[in-house]
Image (cartoon, rainbow, N blue to C red; front, side, top):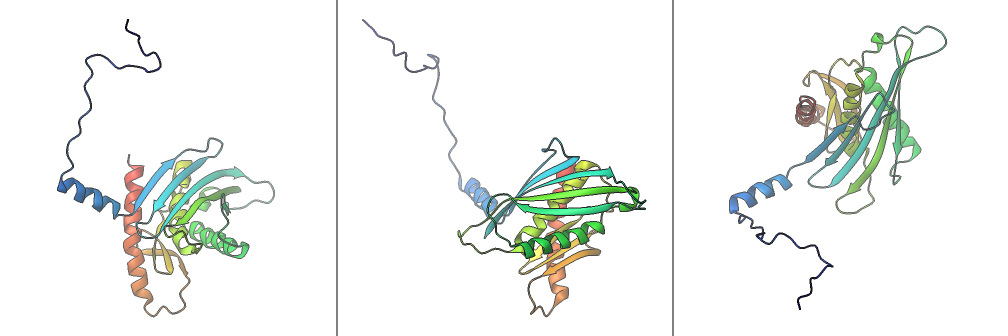
Length: 232
């Protein structure tokens, strides 16, 4: 008497095992080249109650990973005296681990405020308020150390806010992005022809023009990635 094993779900009688192509040297080279490159994952319109939102994951091939979520609320009407242009505010918050103290967070918000006050067409929205929120979801070092660097998170924060503003339909002069080199971050618009923000933790910089040019090259890469995503 044959007894059927009912504990397992059996496949069709004519099923054939899967066979995979052998990995060639060319395929291995392509895979290794991909692993050697920085990667950026982008998604927008995730927060339903916000006017616009974005989520970015940036992985630096050599040292760190940054996950950031941004949201935009507004433009919304403000009560009180008439204002000819909108007021813009940015709040930064760490969701999981705390890497930065209150002084550093205040400096981050001030820097981002200065950048986006120069980019958002505030005169387009009189007597209005635009609130931007940046949530640092994760910031880890590949060597598992506890060192922290504002320089490493700022470009991703700027890219995240830019996409959230576009998702919200807020008018901007141009797509702003940034590049970082060593201990400096420079934010650009207009294909690198105009600087809207500089952050440097290195007091021994001797050639600021070289720092700007190196950051500009990184900015062009980041902006191209943003444009390609928005064209999809």
